Each structure stands twice: as structure tokens, then as C-alpha cells.
Length: 231
Ligand code: FE2
Image 1 (cartoon, rainbow, N blue to C red):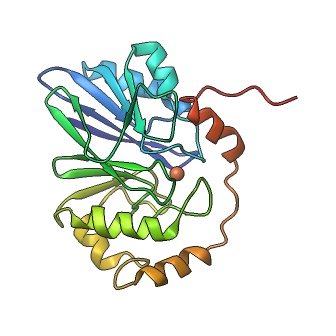
Image 2 (cartoon, rainbow, N blue to C red):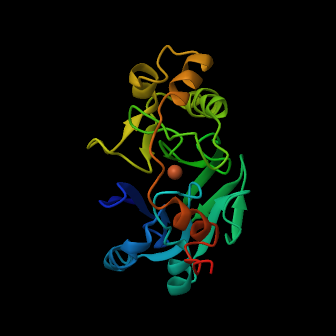
């Protein structure tokens, strides 16, 4: 299996390229619109054919490249049910997505947004903004719910083997990845914290509104097609 972690420095977004060496089929997870040329070049250089884009949720901080990549490659866009209406495949907990010999298992992990899903591929899990390195996504917009996120992390993600590698959609502190066991022990919002304590921490964050939210959310529901401004 080919695996590459890519970074968009403007939005601090990680995009992942996974390719199946036998069939040459490939998937991009959470691609960013501004990085379409970079990502397609890498797909091409590795001798792969892009067959799927998997989005972990409707992002608020950047515009997805899913629609642009679908136009260029005829790939299928996969997203969590209730999120991007434009997706070819809206997936739910327990669904699987096959890309060559790679089977991605869909885990519903709502709470950051209500459409958030994680994709489990063997010993790796792509968690979007549900679980990040020593952190987690905010829960104060897009039907976010701190209690629901605590349940998604503790009842779904923390049930995976401790050695499972966690690949988030973002990092702002220089980390690339983590593991389930590491986050159980060292995530400051979760290690030894009750559901009530986690909800209190999330309620007290007082984060600024994402700069691109008014543009990104409607665009991402349409697979990245930018909406004309309302007159
Ligand atoms: Fe997000």
C-alpha cells in the first residue's frame, strides 16, 4: 500500500493519499481545493488512478477539492450521511468503501459536526476533526455537540486497539499523527476526564469564528463549488 500525508499550510489541513499497488486505484482523504494540482501530480507520479475522494465532514475552514477532482478524474465522492448532498455515496456507521484491496470501514463519529465520520483502514484511522493530536475539533457550530463528541471518542474511537495510528484532518502544533493508546493517556481534554468535564472544557473555549465559514460550509455541501454571493 502506498501512503502519503500532505499538508496545506494556509488551513493547516492534512490530506492523505492511499494507493493500492496491485490495482493502482487510489483515494484522497480531505483534499483541499487550492492543492488540486499538487495532489493530481502526485497521483500521476506514483502511477495511480484516483477512484475515490473521502471527506470526513463538511469543513468550515477550507473548501474541499472533491468536486474539482471528480470533474477531472471521474472519481466517486464519499461523505457522511447528512453532510454534503453532492456526494456520490453518503455513508453511515458500518459501511465499507473498497478501493482496490484497501477496505475502509466507516465509523460514525459525530459531535464536531453531525455528519462527521472516521475511516478505519487496517491499523490506521482517519479521524477528521473528531480526534486530533492531544486535542479534538470544536463543537460550537454546524450542529456540534460536545457530549456527542465525547461519546464518539470514548465509545467508538477509544474502542480501537491502542496501537491504531490516528491521522487527523488538522494539526496546529507540528504533530503529524498519534495513536489511540497515546490519546487515551495524554489527551488533556479526555484522559481521566468525565463527560461533564469534557463538556465544560468545550463550553469555555470561546474560539473565534472561522474566517472562511460563510464561504466554506455552503461550498462544501456542494463538493466545493463556490456559491455566487447573494445580491
Ligand atoms: Fe472541521
